[in-house]
Amino acid sequence: MVYSKWHPKLLLFCYNKEMTIRPILNPNERIDQLATNDVKIIQSRDVFSYSIDAVLLSRFPNIPKRGQIVDLCAGNGAVGLFASSSTTATILEVELQERLADMAQRSVALNDLGEQVKVIHDDLANTLRHVNPSSTDLIFCNPPYFKLDEKSRVNESEHYLLARHELATNLDMICKVSQQLLKTNGHLAMVHRPDRFFEIIETMKKYHLVPKRIQFVYPKANRDANILLIDAIKDGKPGGEKFLPPLIIHKLDGSYTDEVHHIYYG
Image 1 (tube, rainbow, N blue to C red):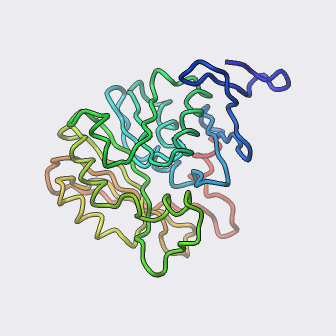
Image 2: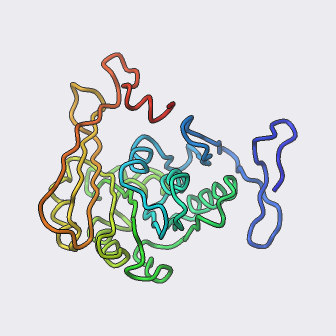
């Protein structure tokens, strides 16, 4: 690996599978990093970038110290990469879009995590071709939030359309694949939209995924919730659900609340 002379901490080049040198950053890309996490993530405005929902998801479940974690709809790999600093578990990032999978792979190289984190460029529906059934301790999923209908913004770029809308996968497929991948008592941690809460609960139960921890996230105290976090257990016993205290992102003046400021800045 080669480091820049003008900025020794910025990795400029990595080796691909053919062991040839390639740039770590392509045009219109940047490197982002949380102040509370050493992990660096390659981002681009040309494709769907991680935001607060990915950060919250990576911190929401109890992360196993070892074993196997799968990140479905991984995008540029942010959730799994953030989680990597809290575990020695193998992390498998599954992403359909070639450009996002490539960004994730370069972020893995950027953070020297190639022994722990693997990127799988394939349709989520094919995950069982790469991962053994009933082998996974925890699944993360930050899926497309919107069903495709007449109100959908079909004039968006293909990258944004696939990331936001249920074109290539949907809630039913995600829960079906998760049920197949998880060990008994394994966890599925998902971030989604609150207006699909009841549909999510019913779909999870259809595949024997029992929601146990639920949290609603609000942009401000005087606004409706706009993010939903759910942690479900495969073959869990009914009952014992916990609705966590609401998380509020911004104070009324627009600054971060103390809890969110701590997440970003420590």
